[in-house]
Length: 83
Ligand SMILES: [Zn+2]
Ligand SMILES: [Zn+2]
Ligand SMILES: [Zn+2]
Image 1 (cartoon, rainbow, N blue to C red):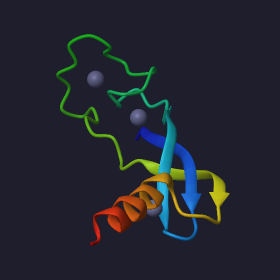
Image 2: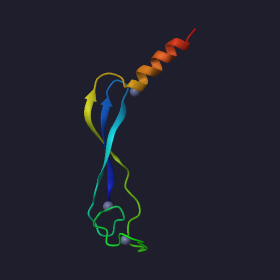
Image 3: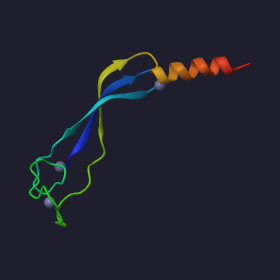
Image 4: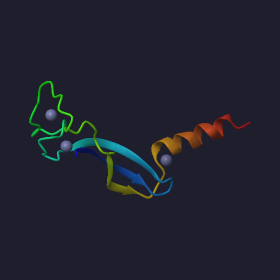
């Protein structure tokens, strides 16, 4: 089955994954609705065709030893609201 591959950066300190871009991995099967090899590109009603994509896979193309921008921001605003 086809699935999306999410390229992104993994922040080691906060364990957050920040997606950068998504690409689709084509399984090239004729019975898969998402494949460009799908046998019925228009109005497919075949019950044997796959209509679901498998869960996307994270592909960390970069590793960062610091926290992600979200966590830095959260920390900063948290410190500001603390009175
Ligand atoms: Zn597929
Ligand atoms: Zn089909
Ligand atoms: Zn984070």
